[in-house]
Structures are given as structure tokens and as C-alpha cells.
Length: 62
Image 1 (cartoon, rainbow, N blue to C red):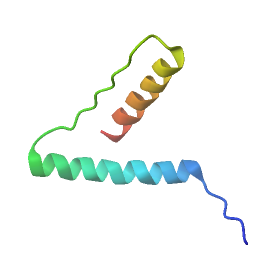
Image 2: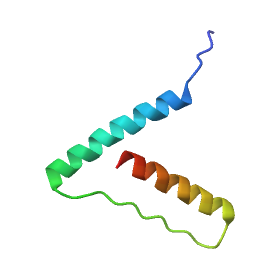
Image 3: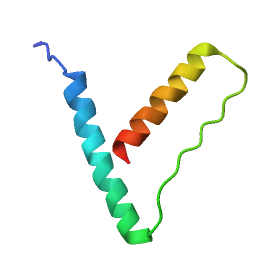
Image 4: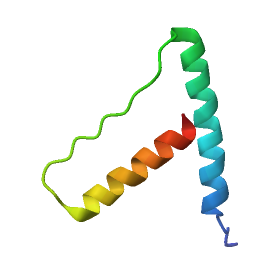
């Protein structure tokens, strides 16, 4: 069996580009801007960092 090397950064960039297109189409069709809600319970530091990462990516894709 031949090994296949996956480039995670390239895959992530491709997924983000596709998502940008889908968001743009959604806005054109509905006239609405999609939103994101994160519900956190407690003050876990790791969960806060994860939430910030989610928000950063959400801003990148629109």
C-alpha cells in the first residue's frame, strides 16, 4: 500500500475558499448574513482559546 501525504494547510485553505463561496451565495439568495453562536459553560482556559480560534476562522471566511 502506498502512503499518501496530506497537506493539512492546503486542504484547510481549500475548505475555507469553498465556504466563502457558499456564504456569498447564501447572502445573495437570502439577503441575510449568517451568524455564529458559541455557548461556553465554565471558565476553562483551553475552551476559551478554542472559542477564539473558531471566531478567528469565522472572520476569515466571512
